[in-house]
Image 1 (tube, rainbow, N blue to C red):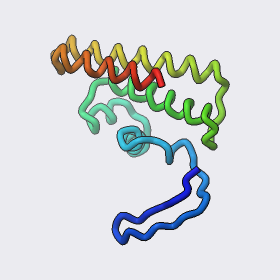
Image 2: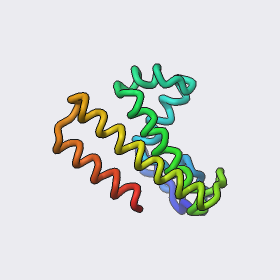
Image 3: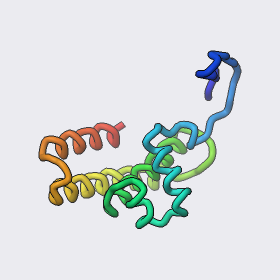
Length: 129
């Protein structure tokens, strides 16, 4: 639960208990992906163009977003419900999809081996939390 809100323009801070939701807990990258998803009405081909990434990457990011929302639900952030086995399956599926997308980008020459390894390590640490 949020306890303080601050306006960056005027630096006004309001304190209190403000209920959160699963979307308010998302990071900037996930929010950007979600905005593109809504603006393109979920059409993956349009999302590919808007984000400049491949179909597997879109699917991987979608799986990651789904797992993130499931994790927030498991943590008690309001808005969605999911069983713990569904959340665990979603997290594992997101990690596998993310790894596949990274390997496909490596194979296509879109990144170096070192970049792929760094992204795989980041994915593993993010999904392990």
